[in-house]
Amino acid sequence: MKRFALTGAAGYIAPRHMKAIKDTNNQLVAALDTFDSVGVIDSYFPSADFFIEFERFDRHLDKLKRKGEQIDYLSVCTPNYLHDSHIRFGLRQGADVICEKPLVLNPWNAEGLQEYEKESGKRIYNILQLRVHPSIIALKKKIEEGPKDKKYEIDLTYLTSRGHWYYTSWKGDVVKSGGIATNIGVHFFDMLGHLFGKVQDNKIHVHTHDRASGYLEFEQARVKWFLSINYDTIPDHIKESGARTYRSITIDGEEIEFSGGFTELHSVSYQEVLNGNGFGVEEALDSIKIVHQIRNEQPIGLKGEYHPLAKLPLAEHPFKV
Image (cartoon, rainbow, N blue to C red; front, side, top):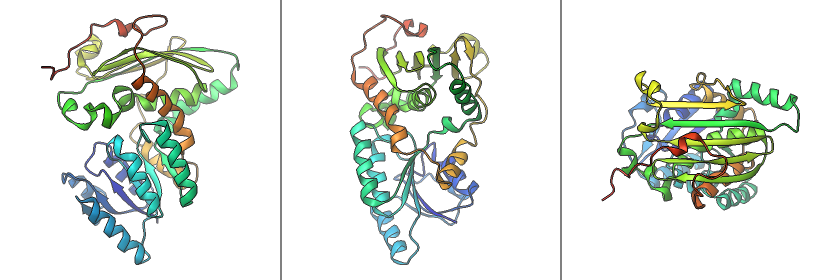
């Protein structure tokens, strides 16, 4: 049984990590969050110690280490801009680290972490759960067995509504979250690179507070993509069903079906890490480079190959004065 600690226990994604730790028959011994709405811990590890101050969390883990009960893994579920610091903290504790995506916000942060890995002798793993989805595994096999010179035509649409709270939270702060493409798109970009190879072109057509759209070309794919957190961008027939999220990925006009099977992907990812097969910094680096470029380049407007939803009327920021 491995001993885990976790930072970011009050966040949206933390329960999936707690479940994964439990599903793999391991133990959460300590958790940290500056917010104390963490009753969900009782559903998984009611005996875990909980801290709202980093300093006391640090001291507690140090005491465990001195008693010969140090943690084996630190799980990082904190806001994106804290990942780099908390990963380094885990390595200094002598633990391997499992971090929620995005691993870090900037490519040079990832490269710095690779140096820390070498110095510490410990490993950093990133949750790239779409890579372990059965449908994506099957699709990768199909592509690998297909013609090597084929370029697939991809349309990626991911619309996931967020209310006004989003702009008040850290997620609405580009410096802390990395913006739309990083927040809700990085795992899709990772999946595309995993399937279709290295990026050859990256153009941004639209990039505002509530949407981003562009064109990516990989070794084996041309991708028109559109991401949005604005409910108004969702197709009417989806709204009529009561849904607030719409996801569609087509390859050469054929829909990829992977709407199910998401609830267990973190547990599968954890098991892969424990088996020595997790995804490290090197695997995460390409998608970090993609979203960093999207965040920092000036959109070119509706030129060349663009996603049809990029033509939708833009919306004002809800808190614009």
